[in-house]
Length: 233
Image (cartoon, rainbow, N blue to C red):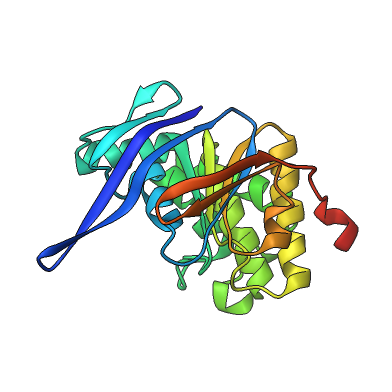
């Protein structure tokens, strides 16, 4: 599903260069639930940006579902993102003046899905995350946990190959965090491939594999016994 070989990335800092990713090798099979961990500056956000086609690598290979991701134009990158990826962010990134239903339907609009079908699909995914009664509510009328559920429904609506979650529980209290992870686990149980960037050990252990980054290299990559979130919900 995802294959990365000898990935390097540097950023210019004035006259100097900061080498952020130093030869990353990384493979994710279909249906995996992987946590990417590392302290600030470890390179985990840069890796996620490259996986999400929001940034490009300097060298190395990135294949997504058999498609080489390299030297893409902005338009092509946007097309691939829409086709392959769903994003979940710490700050939810909902549009404040649109209802929960309209937020979830947005990726389908960019895929040129007809309006009636968009509405039906968006409602189906809102129902899946337990928010059908809140479909007409604005983000300002929702709690943090509800906003993240809307964001997860939006990420799922376009039926992506891979879900990329960047600190999905970072802005939530522990009870709400476990509710969100319970939902992510259930989505993964259905065969969806999910990568979760987190700095929280308890959240990482709710995945099935933990990849540790330090100073731009993978220092540990291990499969683990998954902790089910539902026992805390």
